Length: 430
Image (tube, rainbow, N blue to C red; front, side):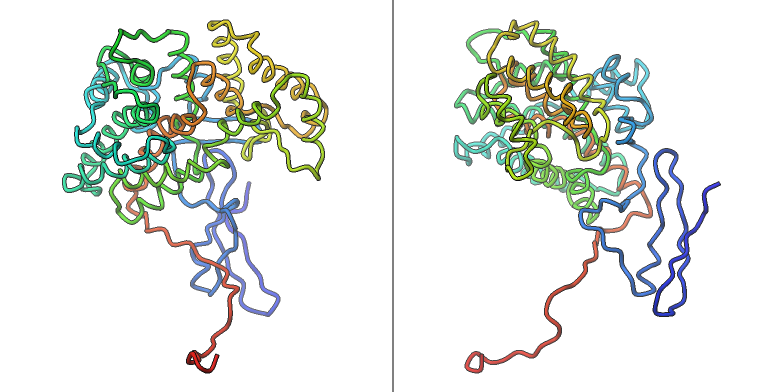
């Protein structure tokens, strides 16, 4: 039986401190350090790599075993048998819906996908060449001005309204960010399409002709949404929670999450993967770049391989690999030079002892980048689509935090290393 407490002792003879151990249902237990500050100590953990900032019952990851569960359900089962609306309901409400609940929820999201007409003027305030993520940060944040007085974040029903609005409207904003960038007219959502199809319609359709989404591509896109819907307490989710801990407007909190996700170390990984493939350029140059990747003195790194959390195969990557090959087969792109290069790089990385021994397997970003490129989605939109997928995770995590009576405003501590106290000198004495 694991101990229920630990004792912290000091070399200077100070009295020892007992700290309780809190068990999790899955994964490692945690040492409860909340009482440390009363004794004049904090912990030092840059990046919070060993610190649990909250307790949550939404998502569980075991990086060593390569496991990802949403509310206890393995991601493989959800990606194979479920759709994004069902997964969204699960993340928000905690259980899979029955038929009546699913229909009601889907109808609610479908009927709220229109955005306020004045938002079109906000788009026009941006340069046409603005990155779609810059536009999304601004437009999603601006929704605080349209839905502020009506939102009481202490009211569960108000939080539910906010969650529905965000889940419904972010796809429209993401698609319009692309349309604005390429100078095409905005396409309004159509209620006859499902969530994934509707985004593809708003992204690719024009007023000139009718658009019918390819079912294979729509299914692939839905899998991308499911696989990216939530991923525990990552940088952007922690950002949403930290912003929300002050009682901020939920649209502003999600805008903060989008800003955090924008970074290349987080949501920009699949965009970086495609840039790497473009840099390699030709299948004949793979050997050269593999050699560079193994050279610790070379700044080149293989993007889309390995994962900070997973020390085994990313479970999402295995699903996305199958989907990737289905998409390339459907579109007849197996002989396209860019995709041949990607598949050859994948083959080498899965067989080369250097990568296998270090568990540098292709991750979900590697495959999702290839899939979105094949679908005709430009690199600049990859992170925006990640934000679209992750919105439901953000609102579920935000709502969980706001529902917790023990939740407190975030206030990380620091190890101060600056100057000690010193006195001000007038300008003529410095």
